[in-house]
Length: 393
Ligand SMILES: [Zn+2]
View 1: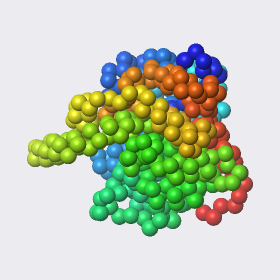
View 2: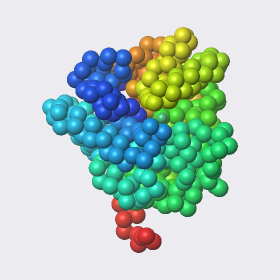
View 3: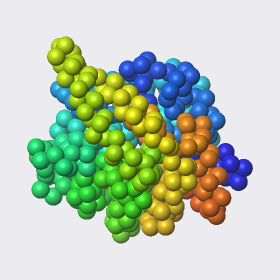
View 4: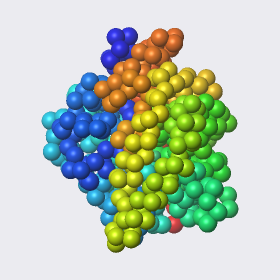
């Protein structure tokens, strides 16, 4: 950790896709990184205290088996905790994260990325909570019938909701509030963001998103949305938090422009490989597709780390220093991270850069994890308050 950041600072990252590696590559956190971003060594070097592991079900490959894949990914996180009880502790509360920090252990938490995992069932949502899931991103890049995604917003064949959320979608948000599951608005379409903001009784958060003013991606948030997150949760709330995604394609406009030039070429290659696989009676796995994308993206120069710091700085200026944090997307970004940021081991670069820009140690502590802890705690308090209210269903 940078020398000036208080050792009391708790470093929390809210999005890592490492569970895909746990399940598909039998990866273990004790293994060498081997191309990934997160393992015990990088966690230790980066002073990372808590990670929300992403439970992400690829919607095409696992069609018809969303719950099964969700459970396998959840199990993979629990297995890591079981295998390394000396180093990892499973956490489901803000207090649990602090307790892990006090005892020098790494806290593993879980968030579901994509509401399709609940297969239109509040019962499944409740059972995922029971298994320890503490946030859910309402959509991934796919709209799910009750919430719209920014990922397929331009696809006219995808049915849309009328107001961003259907009535069932509103029930999902309220049930999450009641359970104490953080409502994650990363990935959702703008109307879904605003509808969720209006419906949610607890502050909302973005587990891995950036500012659209600096990098024009539909995955990023407008200044108006950033301010809305800060004011979410009702008049007595201290507001939500935007956890900044590290992916260069969401961080830097230059990188994004270069990516947009390459994209049609890559899509053509991927489509060709998919057709060939189909003709041979197989399928072109998502992991292979990722490799193709990565190969092309590796040809684009990585943006400087300062672009990522610009993102944090912008959100701090627009929404407030109490409303920005870290949502790396480690092991999930199909391209590159900014220069100097190769794995979780490099996380201390961020507070150092913030200090260099004149942020105080206290402000750094908020960005590193203090803000997320505040939101998590408020979500827990809202859950307790709602549990005394009569339920309609
Ligand atoms: Zn994502």
